[in-house]
Length: 168
Image (tube, rainbow, N blue to C red):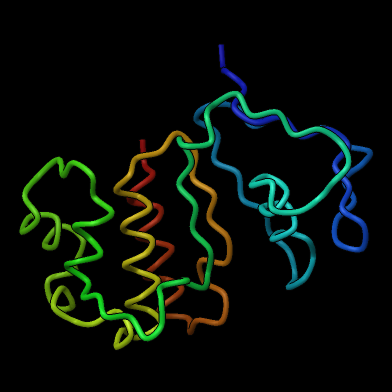
């Protein structure tokens, strides 16, 4: 039997989202994609799930919020950041399951580990962020705008990274 992880019931955000006539249940192990044109409400769903906006309706989490891995398409690294990639990795990885050298190799970060965060390309920055979110191995991943505004090759690369990491 599958275990519900998130239940949304009759959620409405004025001028942003109206799924007030629907109930959505996401079960453990489900892989759910919310697709649509820009400004169709995908980010509004994430904002409501993360309790970043006022909404009516009910969102019932069956897991603690600290078991979420959250990715937004724009990183909020301090700018200008004085951190290097390797310093951020050490801060985020609380208890590495393998050596850092192996982590960099497994995640194709060797070439950028000594780069300053502010000097990363958009693709490198998104790859790093996705890698760090996935490394936390949360119960639920919320990924918003993974490939927004990227070229086709970059979209393919990040999508494949996500698919490979979430295969069961």
